[in-house]
Image (cartoon, rainbow, N blue to C red; front, side, top):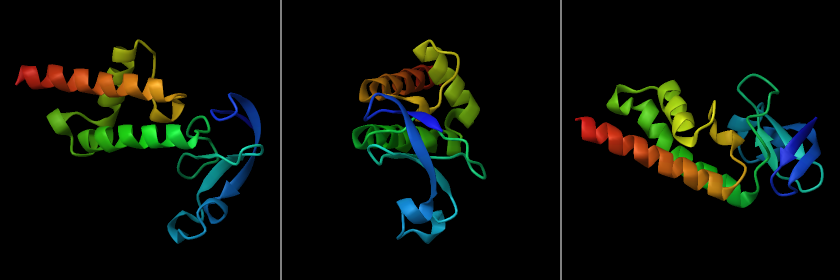
Length: 131
C-alpha cells in the first residue's frame, strides 16, 4: 500500500508489520498493525482491529507534535470537559480550521499541529466565556 510519508514528502510503498516489529519491548502492542515506509522506516499505526492506517506516516518531529496535541485534546473529551465528547471536539476543530473533517493523524506538518493547538485554545476560550 502507498501512504504519504512526511519524511519523504511523497506517497511511498509500505510494508504491513505488527507491534512485534515496531515495539519488540511492548507485548501489549504485539498484535497491533502498522505500516512502515520501505525507504525511511517511519511508521503509522492502524485503526483498532483493522489494517486501515490512522493517517499519513509522520516524521519523528511530527510524531512529537501530534503527541503534544493528544496530550491536550484527549483529556478534554475523555473527561467530557464542558460536557463535550470526542466527536464534538473534532467537529469544532475542523470548523475552526475551515476543513470538513479533522483527525490528528491527518496532520502533515508541525505548522498544521500549531494551527490545531490554536484552534483548541480558541474553542476553550469561547467555552470558558460562556460560563
